[in-house]
Image 1 (cartoon, rainbow, N blue to C red):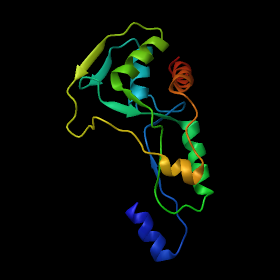
Image 2: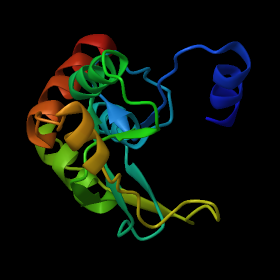
Image 3: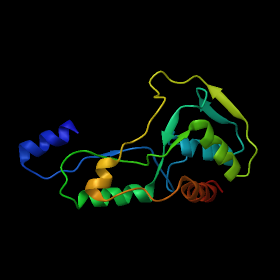
Image 4: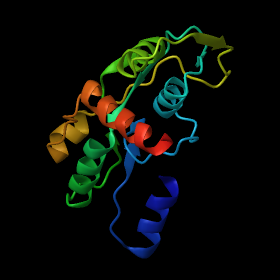
Amino acid sequence: ESLCFDYMRMHNCDIRVARIFNTYGPRMLVDDGRVISNFIVQALNKKPITIYGDGTQTRSFCFVDDLIEGLIRLMNSEYKKPVNLGNPEEYQIFEIAQLISKKTNVELKFINQPLPKDDPTKRKPLIDVAKKELNWNPKISLDLGLNKTIQYFKNTLS
């Protein structure tokens, strides 16, 4: 953000700054290391799901189609300050693991590993600015988004 704003001031150009929060969906890499893709790949391969910490830490997940809509609205706007783009609905990591286990129809075991020191216990975007300035709000539910993402990984892994 700092570099973008410095560039804008130095070159008198127009910029937009999006703060992107946990995005997921089709076309994620199998080994990208994100929670949703890791859990889905582990489930489809019938491997235990690795949960760091006790799984009570929360995350919010925004489906890629919603994020793209937010980015397009930001680029077409006149708003010049940073904007958070993400889904403010929070889920515990363990809830996500259980949901993916259910949706993949695979009875899974869970392995707990120590929580990394820099891993936040809560991550939830405040999207009031996006709502007000861009008239944007994520629309795709986690349930629907996971269905599309799981289908993509099934096709990719087969």
